[in-house]
Each structure stands twice: as structure tokens, then as C-alpha cells.
Length: 168
Image 1 (cartoon, rainbow, N blue to C red):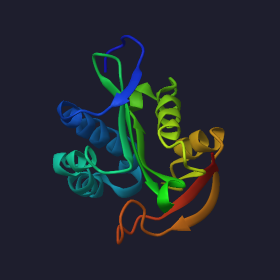
Image 2 (tube, one colour; image 1 turned 90 degrees about the vertical axis):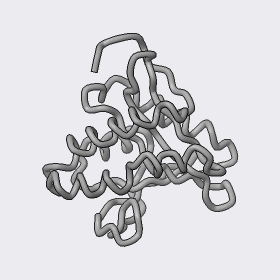
Image 3 (tube, one colour; image 1 turned 180 degrees about the vertical axis):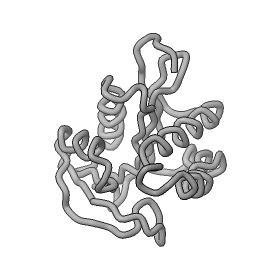
Image 4 (cartoon, rainbow, N blue to C red; image 1 turned 135 degrees about the vertical axis):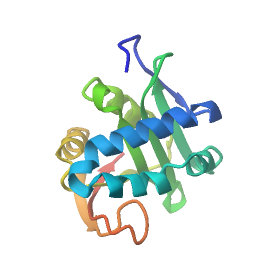
């Protein structure tokens, strides 16, 4: 990815979906190949990160789908949706390109998501226990572990994860 201007957070447009998908695939391989193997990561990204799956998020009610963009590239993305009649937010995805991590993009995406749900009292997410970088990021932003799941991301996924929550 090219070094360039600062990133700004904006709503995803249909024309961004190929770039968002490419970012997700690259980030997933970088983060999870060592844990699950490249073939399993291909299987997951081939199911969860299709253009059709991403496109469905563009019109999902009570949700926010945003990217960090600098005019040349997309450096990160986030997707969240309101739950519990708007009193809670489930952060479904927050990914920053591996070459852009540690530059404030994740913090900007998280802040935008939190601000998009003014009625929410808490935000929750699932994070792979072995993903120490993500766990440190969320802890630094006020999240604490409140539980566990054996099916991160989708029912029957078989991916164990920690459940983190933050009061808003």
C-alpha cells in the first residue's frame, strides 16, 4: 500500500466493495494463516467476505459500514449493527491493513462506530484469543472480557473467541 495523505472515515459505497474484500482477504491471511492454515482462511473468506455478503450490508437497517480512506487506498474497515432495541452495538468487523496498523486507523474506525449509535449503552465484539494484537487494541480502548464463544462470526463456525464489551 502506498504512503499518502491522512485517512478519513466514511460510509462504504458499492464501488468500494472489491477493495474492502481484498483488504479483508489480505488481513485475514496475515492474521490467521498461522492459526488456522491458509486453506481454512480461504474457506472462511470465500464464504464471509464475498461481494454479495458485503453488498448486503450496504442496506442493512440499524447498521454502519465504514472505511478509512485517504483518496488512494482503503486502509481499514468496520461494520457494526445495533442490537437489543438499539441499546447495544455488536461490532462485527474492524480490520486494518497489516501495513497500516498502529497508525490510528483502527481507533478512528472504532470512534466512528461508537458515535453512530447515540442510543447505545454498550458495544460488544468477539476476538480470537490468540490474536494478541487485537486483544491489546481493544483493552487499550476500554474493552474488557465478559465471556467466551465457540462459534465466532457465525453459528457453527467452530472458531472459539473471547467476548469483549465496553460501556458507552
